[in-house]
Length: 263
Image (cartoon, rainbow, N blue to C red; front, top):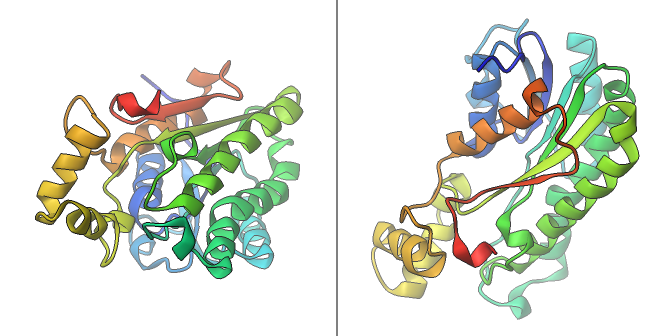
């Protein structure tokens, strides 16, 4: 299937690693041009030439960072066709009472306010394009609260709700707005020290990989018995960004391997 993304300009937040890096690589493979923003962009530097990929170092948890990313993308490529709100963090703590105001603020600023600010800055440019699209990365945790990251779950519920609101307001302007809700996905947030794998290993008192398998099979009850890969999320994002999804607006696409606990 030809997705028709060649020479489209995609602005991707959190592009420097994990799911965002997989999304960036997928757009480049389809012939799109990418402005990729993140706190660190080392993994982006050698992926593609400057006329195809423009890495931007920005703190997307701040208003200034979001606005500067959009400005740099437009200055470099001239316009934006696609916005992917991907940047996100997870602060793994096993109780609501362990979360401080600083924890809540950091999570909401990064996961929800970054979407608000980047979308607000990008919309004037997106509305100038014939077939523009916004795709935000939500989570199944927006429906089923994650006991290890309650603040994360709340932020992703906000992403889902805001997606619907934006689709209603700007769909008539030719800007489709959708979100992808991944299930458990093997990213740096899982694999880093004190990340989700370590949390599961401690909770289930077993080796990290065995704990992940137990979580996938017995807790999330994913039929294939394993968590997802970033590339699988990226494929869903590509489809929603393409003209093949021209009549899809205001949708939430679950990409969770069929986790029955999601429903």
